[in-house]
Image (cartoon, rainbow, N blue to C red; front, side, top):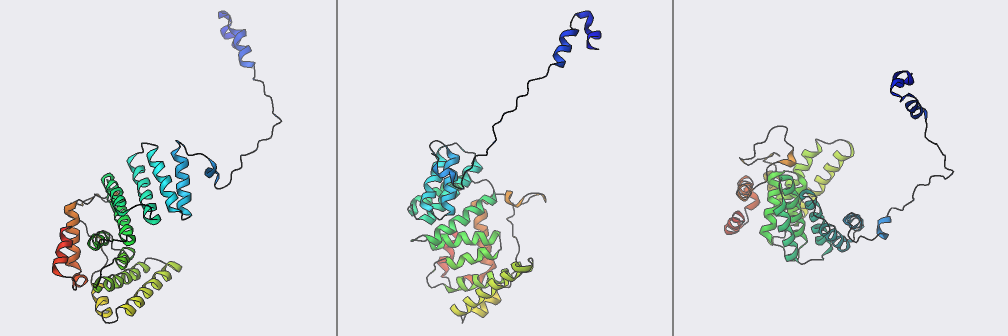
Length: 294
């Protein structure tokens, strides 16, 4: 057929021959064997100029509780490539958390890294992660700054009224100011019961148990203040309170919410002080003023 079509051009035989020619198919007798690697194969591989191997080693060391070792590997993973900002934020956050838990940096050095991390942020979700990290730093620091620590936890509670954030106040070292601890414990217990209503099964049971344990702890530690603190802590229902500039379309992802600038953060703190006056009832007035000015 091809020879009929291309016969006049003298190409028919060549095309037929090319079309009918089949490649050689030689079957090998060699049996395929998959490479077998143990779970920690990367530990025996050099991470010289290979940030991915360094990252694997960092993650393994962190999961095993070797935080100082993890810190050195996260540092190497950061330095060996010019990462995208979002990836750099994640690596830097892991590096700082490793330094905090491994106690391998001075407070001044950790604060410097936290400042670098803050300069990279672009979303409110990333900002929440920063505040969470700052809380861990202040809670573990030997020379914790009471007002700075308190401010960070206030920002977390003001933007996300969840029990896990209110419980962070229990780690704030505040001297003789007991209202802060008993109120936050009662507030966390109240929110845990609210959160239990949105759960089922063992999660619901666990939330209720945690609420009961918190209240028992508050009764034991602050027997004279518990009843009043519980009443005050349950006055405001859980709600998300946005800054005036925080207008987003309904489809916008929560993690993409607008970054809170210094003015908006001050307003969040001021609103918290107005909303929970009993929390600050035993604070000297000048201390409340200093908190507002941060």
